[in-house]
Length: 306
Image 1 (cartoon, rainbow, N blue to C red):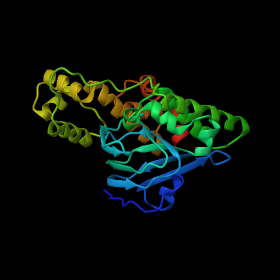
Image 2 (tube, one colour; image 1 turned 180 degrees about the horizontal axis):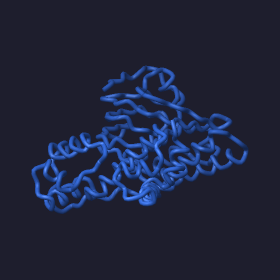
Image 3 (cartoon, rainbow, N blue to C red; image 1 turned 90 degrees about the horizontal axis):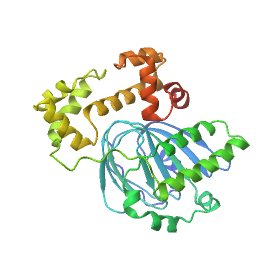
Image 4 (cartoon, helix red, strand yellow; image 1 turned 30 degrees about the horizontal axis):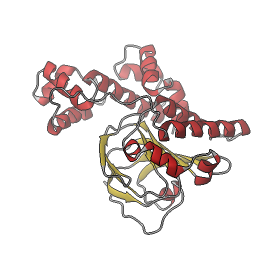
């Protein structure tokens, strides 16, 4: 883990964190619109513990493209928010806002840094948008498949900027901002049930430890339940209350995250990846991948290949 000090001087763009090495990262790649008003930076993060980041002048939209399902603590000036980051998690950081972060693992995150002049050109008054959205709205992680899909498309288009591509970026960024800042997000993780009791942290830790020992994720509900000392039925109910999804759904999302890593870092064929991760066929794998990610695995590999 790395602790980050807060420099005195305010920065300008998200990339300043990389240039000054104030942001621990394993890998980073930046693409820009022709006028530089929109920067897209794909970062493989290193863990951060108790890190304060200096303010920058841009609005930053961060989308988790590959998840570690780690516990996150975040503060953008409205109090600390704690959550587990998941695939598709979207976080908005206002311009001129110092931020605090704690998280583990090495999540792959696509950050969009949007200059104030671009916001103004799109007819967006930040102060009024913030007032309309409300602090609570932006303090929490957001989820929206349309925004995640647009983020992937923008990243691809920025690889070779062209006039029509620039026009697409302009409209796509405007749509993203309208959805996120206007509070029009459609997809949110299932809310934990209010009934019954959930898994205490020590039992959830045992589940995660077992999963970490079995990278193939060929685990049964009975094995997960046994690691916590609970019956399968009791475990399923408690897990679903805690996580807002069933153990089966959670394991499926973990398999997709492992698939993303293999797609990005290896040349393994899709069929081989599918079978290694316990899917019945490459068609089943592709269908589930597209359902959770919003694009086929082949398209994801072409877009985010290292």
